[in-house]
View 1: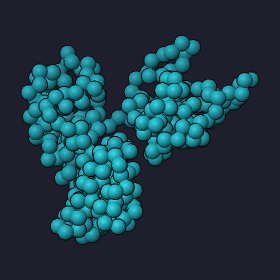
View 2: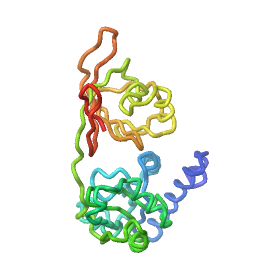
View 3: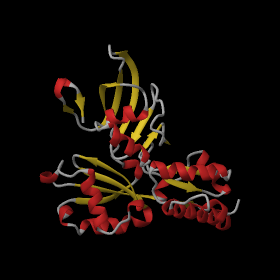
View 4: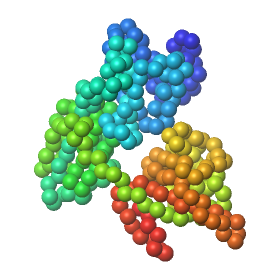
Length: 282
């Protein structure tokens, strides 16, 4: 199947452009015998491109975002001559990834959120696809970028008033400040294990809004995009809702007199607040 036949399958212009760029990179790898990588991808984009690579029977590729559990990843395509290097995990990913550490002054520590850092990045003219995960801590943040944009971003952030008193330094991905997420547990009561029921409860919204989020392609089950609201979920399924968090379905504990299910759900999070009734949630 040639390039135009593949592109003809996609009506969404953003997806078509994304796929076209991938196909160009595959050609470069084959003709120039060199490594090529995509921009940073969200989970849906990653799934889309990995399916194409699978259909084309291209095995020499890896998805990585700078650390094992990164949400935003690159797909790196490499020539056959480097197959052993990647299989033996001897490739230096610092040749592709850049990382910037922002250390805030004492009076600003704990004041900035993920949104604040992302807003600053957009303000200096960086495109979102050039930026990977933003790992926020009390002291500041580690920002993963493409190596080729690291200096531009670092210089740009230094010029912003909000970071005028902060320290900015380049680090290697091995130095990223990765913290194990705190796990929050909640027992939810739902009429069934349908995805719309579960999603509405775990993100605390209406069934109608949960349906909209699912149809907007923002929900992944075990890292696979799912848009069918009636999909039946089961114990140990991992649910990712873009912009809302990551949840894992635990045990079905019991059934109420009205026939509803009581289900244990765990959520990754960095902060805990207490709801009425003593339940913990963020």
